[in-house]
Amino acid sequence: MKKTFFTFALLLITTVFYSQSITGKWKTIDDETGKAKSIIEIYEKSGKIYGKVVEILDASRTKELCQDCPGEDARKPIMGLNVIKGLKKDGDEYSGGQILDPKNGKLYKCLIVLESQDKLKVRGYIGFSLLGRTQYWYRVK
Image (cartoon, rainbow, N blue to C red; front, side, top):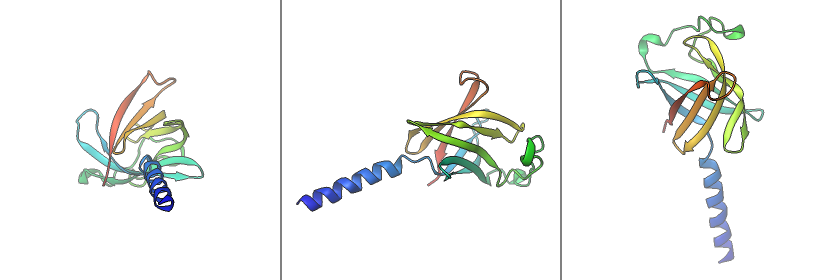
């Protein structure tokens, strides 16, 4: 009986912690048009969170380059581009890194919060988080 209870408790704890991860594939939604734009794969590397474009949903834009991106991202294909860079977990949120908007080539500070298992709040901002914009991304199953 004790073994069964311990096994069940361990399985429950593992499931709760595993399902609370932001890693995986997320569908981005254009906050101006409301249309799905891309799929971003969020992954962890050396204790930090990164996200790269793995699919562009508008077939006419799959070959676009990041014309105005700074530094090493300049004129690289948007497909495969890391748009989330170096976030660290801080309580229930991820911050301390940057997010790149390939549309205008600008880097913003970034704050990500997992609102539910399948909904991610992504905020890019300048200076402090009041000056920015929020998007909601949805887990791809």
